[in-house]
View 1 (cartoon, rainbow, N blue to C red):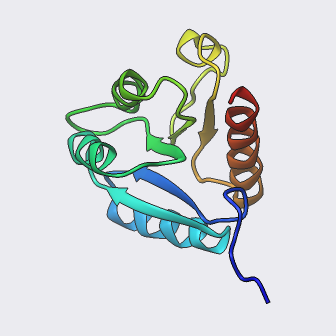
View 2 (view 1 turned 180 degrees about the vertical axis):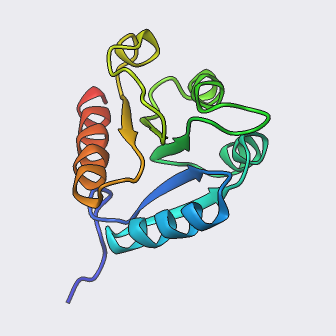
View 3 (view 1 turned 120 degrees about the horizontal axis):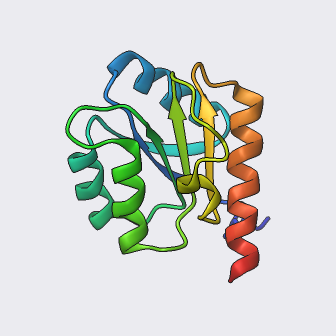
Length: 134
């Protein structure tokens, strides 16, 4: 019996950037239930360190963080990999028509608290879009 998995069947590796430890743990657990592996970073600087060391399929970042905002994380990771899908999550209202979202393919904004089904659908959509670009 062949137990090897194709690239599309393997667990996706996600980078989660969230400064609130409780929220980070909850999202890591949720992503595991959705069959994704997530590395968590509590700051934008730590996220960029991890991004340099590992290959990620998608980045999920909080918007409002001390030191480096989610928009700055988005710009930094896109500077290193212009096609990496990014989901920005925020407890405050973010206009889906914000040019930082509409100008970029492969970027989505989700409100907190994060709805599991919506997160799952958004991850799948962004990964499929990236796959179709290859």
